[in-house]
Structures are given as structure tokens and as C-alpha cells.
Length: 164
Image (cartoon, rainbow, N blue to C red; front, side, top):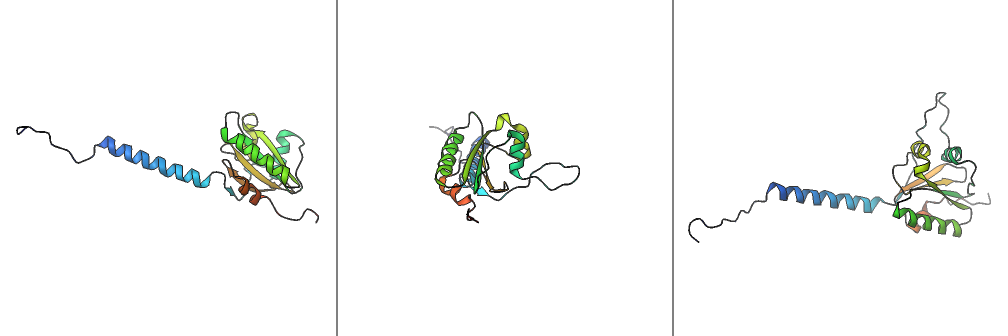
């Protein structure tokens, strides 16, 4: 090649930099979701406006207001919010059902989030599946967004003695 030969440009183009940054952000988000999905965290306060400033109702009160009478577990109630096209919801349903079968005093209740939007807003449910763990009195003691593992569910159940 004569003097008009091809010169290699060692600098990345703007488009290449954007692609690298987008991949890095996607990997960071994926790692965050991997680390946080299904982990039970402490409770949130209910966001319910009361004109008389009365104490906030229990999570169970909100559930029974929306669904009518349901059975509250003596030890715990696992309340799962699901939606029709949610693949992790099916796995969560199976896991919570197994836990309810093997742990005495635990009940599993599944709620279709799409048909109970007022309850979803009232309990600050942001995605499906979301699992609330309610103690025997109906107080929310933990919640998990995403599909929890069986060990995580078992560790979130209150361990007080049922005989007392």
C-alpha cells in the first residue's frame, strides 16, 4: 500500500463506549436483583390515610377488608401477591404451600394483585411475587419481593411457642 494506507484507530467510538456502559449498568442491575430477590426484610408501615389519626390497622385487617373473612394462621400467615403471567409466582406458590404443609400453625393465602389493586396500593406492593409474613396477631413481620427460597421462608416465620 502506498502512502494512503489504512490507519488503525485505537480509540473507541462513542457508540462503543455507550454499549460498554449499557452492559456494565445491566450487569450491575442483574447482580443487585440476584442479591435482593426473595430476601425477607423488616416490615413497612401501611400507607393509609386516617382523618382521625387513629393507629394504623394491621396488615391482616387490610387483607380481610379486601377479601372478607379468611383463616389467620396461629403461628404465621404467608400472604402472597401474584399476577397471572408471573412465572416466579408459580414457584413461590409451590414453596409457600410446602412450608404451610410442614410447619404447624402456618397458613398460605394467595391474592391476585390485578384484581385487588386497592389492597396492593394500601400495602405498598410494588411487584409480584411479593410475600408478606404475618404473625399470629396479623401484624406484618417481614416481606420479600421476588421468589424466596424455602430456607428463607422458614427463617422468616415467627418462632414463638404455640402453646403459650
